[in-house]
Length: 257
Ligand code: PEP
Image 1 (cartoon, protein in one colour):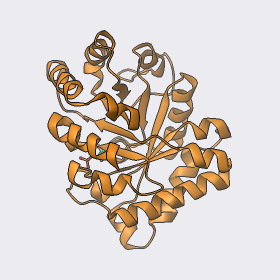
Image 2: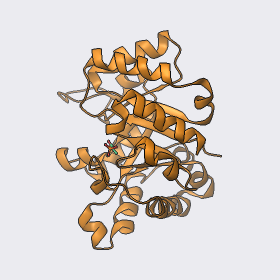
Image 3: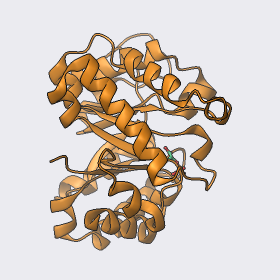
């Protein structure tokens, strides 16, 4: 049984004071039994990580700390980049890589995503590798080809047991931050195809244990329906994750799904 993972991607929102307030509000609203049913993570901006880590540690919160991105090298002359080793030292547990905003706005390629996935695993953190099609690709009937190409390229060279521990996030680009969501049936079909590709490439145990999130305008109102689908094991949430009440409601619905 795969435990669903609900991840809040705060993107480039909230300074470290605001982050502190949000995580405290969230901790207050999430009950103990919710954490028995779902894992919850927050991915603040880099400048907030130390602050959020300190609250999580000092209050023994069950919320997991995540980052939004990293480089694949541990140290060196990479001005402005973030080392996976430094994230691990901050007790970061999960790192998003290949988010469509990084692919589109910052030129992240499948090859770079693959390097990052390997580096994140090498530093004992869990990658959340994002894949998803554009609206044009969807309308041209290329969703599955595009998404499965990204999955195979991003996981290339990984061992079966490494893949089995990972998280993939299916995020149709046209649904991110737009208020448009894939129907639960559509999202399920793509997530099932992703799982099928993992089984084919890395074996049935890896396919059975890998967690596949859906992302794209997930809110409290649609979370339960999506997460109830057999191949959807949680959600990667942007906009709705920076509102403590909305995110806590979303997590509670997911826990009931
Ligand atoms: C995201 O940031 O990955 C995302 C899915 O954003 P939103 O929930 O705002 O669409």
